[in-house]
Length: 121
Length: 109
Image (cartoon, rainbow over all chains, first blue to last red; front, top):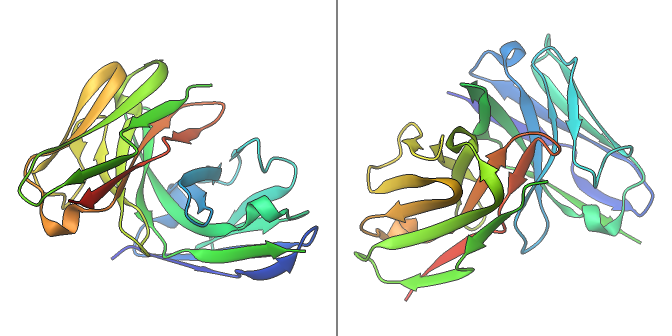
């Protein structure tokens, strides 16, 4: 059974930093592209960042590029999101997702339960 | 950048009725890049449809996807009580890698 378990959420001040972690199990983690998606309170889904299976290629939304860093440890089956210079608009539930790619397209086949990040002044 | 616009924003229907949800892209895109997700309150999203028309594992056949070019549709043939939720379309591509529509809330009438 695929499991994704996020941790590291919490309350942080504007301009502060936080690191989210996602522990993966039940699938070949080192062969999977991984993604972070967030959802602000009462709002829709927003793609944040993705990372290739080897960790060699990163992708970021314009809203977080230069402030957030995605990384992984394939030996520990862990995905991370380092978030710096946090803003009020980064307040959201952050979901970790496993991507499945087929015929040059990808989609999120498994999701974690989410971690809440609240940025307050 | 391709923008996805979903309509309606809210759809009010009764169990047993047919639901038709629309996702319109600002530019033509290949159907293999279009997916649909369902999200119930307090839960993580769940993949329903990928490649515009292929059901994900475990998804009931009352859910179907169709469309091409700029117009895509998610149809729920006969609504069950558990189908009332929010639905999002998503496009895979580049710059940015993924884009979501703003969502359609399907509520009980």
